[in-house]
Length: 156
Image (tube, rainbow, N blue to C red; front, top):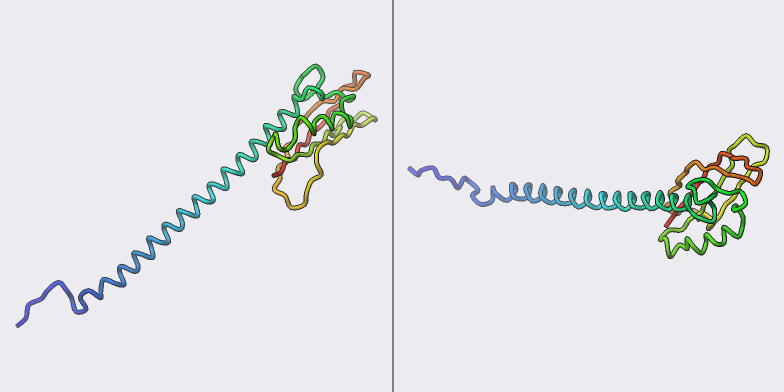
């Protein structure tokens, strides 16, 4: 009588399905790693974009021609005009800051006279954009201090 051996009935052909299952599992695992890496890269790029938007907003809050005595977030009502907007377009040119931008200063105080001012480019449709809002004060010539809101929108 013949003895038992370890080859089995089909021998080598029993190993092929098991090998295919292992290979499919390895490929799926590697594809999931590649997808996670790509998603993480997009997340980091979006995070940098948000950080750049906040930094740009802070630079607007301290922009000399807008502020009263260079104090952050304290804007002069007399500076909210077209010549300041034109100067900002030069000082914060999109090629220099790496972002396209639009900003608005809105008076939210209870005073009867309201201030509203904007500068920058028109917002395009469908662009990836981030808006940063921060409180500011607007001081007019009669030393009234109006509460305001600075809305900075940036896009690529």
